[in-house]
Image (tube, helix red, strand yellow):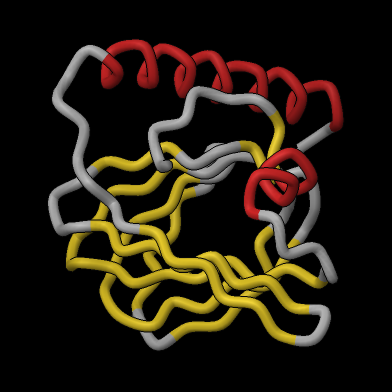
Length: 135
């Protein structure tokens, strides 16, 4: 696929995700509990997402490590590529925004290298402004 076509596809996917966010924002929101863990130069953000949920993540500014501890989901990246991810799984997530359908309840960790421990500052450092469906 050439660069121009890839950029057009990426723009179409982004528009579809934005439309999905607008529609979903009017619906009751599902509770997805979040925990924060800190270690030497490590920040781990863990979220639990219930089965049957459609999740639109925030736009991550950098590539980062992910750890899927339990569950199964279908993930759609900004390029429109769909893939099923099942626990246990450790992988590198590219920067950008992902959308997922949760098949089986998922416990998922985003792992970042940082010495910052203020969650609010981390939010500004790690993700760009986007509608917060996952809080």
